[in-house]
Image (cartoon, rainbow, N blue to C red; front, side):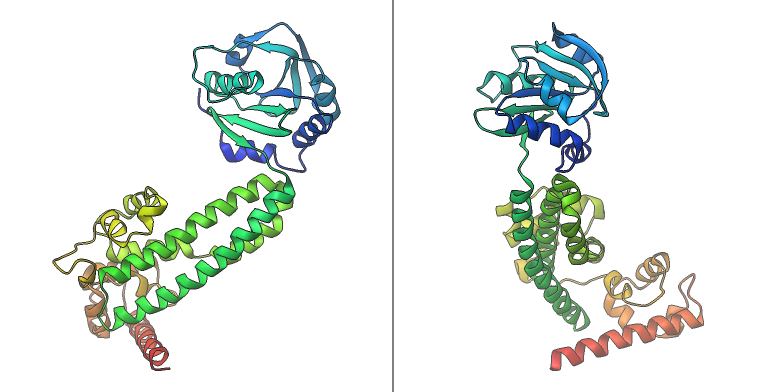
Length: 350
């Protein structure tokens, strides 16, 4: 059976939810527990003994039922308690990285059934979620907030650097001085920001309602970053953008820090000069700054012109040769590009 969505499961277990409250009560009571978050046929097959229930879930009921040695089984929506004091009997040959009996059982059940399993450890005073056999420790809201705020501070610095390298790339594109090193630098910075964004997003999910302020700050910092990445890839990648995104994601931290590895991931056509090889953008990113220009029309203009330099040197008459570009739109594009060039030159001068 398909495994549940990790984000959805973490949302159910976030601070402020009834389920997290019940698990916290078990932890404060200094007892352990196994809680299975699904009453599927696969789970039922592993259950032995105990007794069947069909009562509404509440934190206090979960706490009381967990005082017994057996596991507690909830329905998939975690709204009702279906079984209690159950002995779970997963396949003992399934590999496990855990040592404690409760954790070994929880991990094997999650693998064998595809259902999330929560283990509350009395000795380690932790709550752990097992999903697809992977262990995820549920940290307190204070710890998560501290990590999220630290990551936000890092994200703000990296985002500021992205703005700088994008502005520098614009100037280089206008002057036709772009090299593979410049493209790689932009791709590196944007990918780093996106990875920090994804990390903070995980904290937001784990925080539940406590993560609302973090979410607002995150949205403010990363709005438009994925769009900027897509435009850069559209301008320079030699193959499908989605594949380029996936190849960047596949790089580990060491590879991402290596300009050569990033250039290889993007398959940039490096010549004998290596990273100093001249690059010619297609013009997608520049046209994105022209107001009220539909993306389909911008793509058609790029396809017709072939390169940014030809686009920058085009006349309104040449622009009107593109399907969907009339006199007014051609003039708007021409004026928009002229303003970008002038703005870039002024910034470079000062």
